[in-house]
Image (cartoon, rainbow, N blue to C red):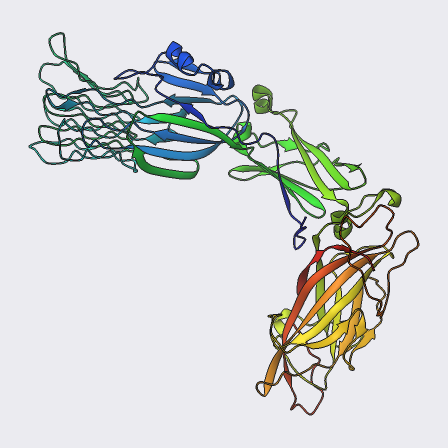
Length: 608
């Protein structure tokens, strides 16, 4: 396991796993009107649609209830046109945070009907997804336009934009596509009707008053119809498809309806609409419409840091409620435009700690609704349980151990990361470190560099010792390039100018040395690379302190037993520099400095 402690970050998800995709269809219905409740119950027999989503069907619209709060991905595919070379329906996709019990209306678009004898084809319906009581839809996939039998002219696809598509001007007249959620125009008197929009129906122009306009989603959503007792009815599809008449075809339904066609013209497809998160709209569907629903995420993020946690969740999950507390009710939430946010230290706000099997620490708290919240009472908003978990080795690295018996603690044999801070000081007193803005600085080969390597966190334990495995100088950050000049190995000086300075803290090492020039020009750049380890002594076996040439034995996890008392955490190479070195400076210059750096060091257990 790798523990990233530059900011120790663990993002936990709360609750359900991603669910399978649920697909809602036309339930076998065709033409201008949608399915009945019984048709859909029969269609979905054996699936979880009815039970999980509490399905009801009202006037062809399928009503579902969100079973538990979370983020759901919806897709609305408008029906494709009919006839040769018919236009395609659009697919609109978006993700939405929704609370438990939210009612969602689904209208699944149906293809129009056709009469090959007269060359008349009804427009296809759009698929709509809308939350009950909202002014605008969540998603609309526009319906495609149909063409006459034998036509060599491609039907016009649904639009990926909100505007309905104009019928093509091939004949005398054509209908314009709708705007702003309104229906499209008819091709001409007694010609193809306009497709309906989300807000208003499609236009119907006819002399004998036998045409019925395609209805908007806000109305019944039915397709347009033309005909009486003596005339064949040629309907647009459910979802606002326009009617057809006398060698002319109707526009597709959509957020805004497509334009109807007159003789010789091709009607327009309906417009589409997207909202929510991660939206996509494309034009792909050639058959009947459909709608898909999938739970993808809880919408609750728990960010576990070294000494605190932050929880953020969508306001939509709790019906816009923003008043929450932790178990200590003085610890209250804040909010922004989209989220409720609550933060606490691990040792505050009633957070509980437990120790599992000597290897894991768990910090737990609960986010509760305010006792005076009317919204919370009305919608029965549930508590949110929070857990931040750390392995024992993580806890030592981060210095977040609670007051537990030392005998119960044992680091696991695994890899992780901890922070090393490397600083250059102005004098051997190690009182004032150089700052980033001091760079670059020149130093001569007669100057000393005063270096300190330490943990970036404080571990108040005499049993934990920092050891310098290796330090060397090179002219590049690239460790594979030569030359390299050794400074330290196994806490021992490899360069004759290296001297160790005293430190009162076992997790800090200080040393000074004269820089080595790698001559390429009059002034050459150089970098220092150091590798360090943390050693923990237990059961009377102490870590080595100072220079030792005893060979270390690196062990694997299958070699380590519960009786092994002595652990070493070994790190990757950290880099500092560059600094500029001149061999031509006669007087002692300002002591070298280089950028204060932090090095991520990867932990692995080894035996000294």
